Image (tube, rainbow, N blue to C red; front, side, top):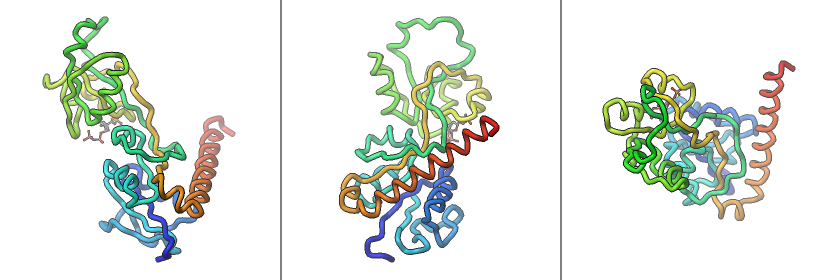
Length: 227
Ligand code: PRP
């Protein structure tokens, strides 16, 4: 392993295949199958980088503390973490939205007085609190770890704040979107100190990733316009 090796943190799960593809496109190939292996620590083929595979919610911590110099994480996880990181590139992939949803059977205008007592189930307590607070609304947060859509169906909450991708989970549970809170994509994040100390390694990597992302997005747009 190169003594000046940089450490890259990648999130387990949905974003991992796109992350591996992106790194490979900028010349950072891995020697093993990092998306299938149970190993968590890898080396790039040329030994110039260590690659960590971590839980997405833990990733901002690894980068903020400098255990990794650079990482890829969903904007939702980044916002919720509150970590103090540089965010030099929007990678475009992993698109989804965070929305407020409620049972579809409730119709008509809502009674605004009810909002003061509203219970909102979410795995994003910080994002949810900030969203409602920005409008001067105080809500009771019901923190959950998953299957958030169940909460309003069994009277645990009046609303949910959760990720929507295809919208299928909302539909199948008779929930309707009330409003959009945020649009989410994967972001490149960098440790502040690493950016200064290892700029000779990180600046070209960030530049290559930006160029590759732009190239891919041009390709997508050309496909959309049929060119
Ligand atoms: C996410 C999210 C929604 C679902 C949305 O859940 O929390 O439940 O995906 O996707 P859709 O709009 O395409 O249906 P995840 O699969 O991460 O599981 P979880 O509910 O246990 O967090």
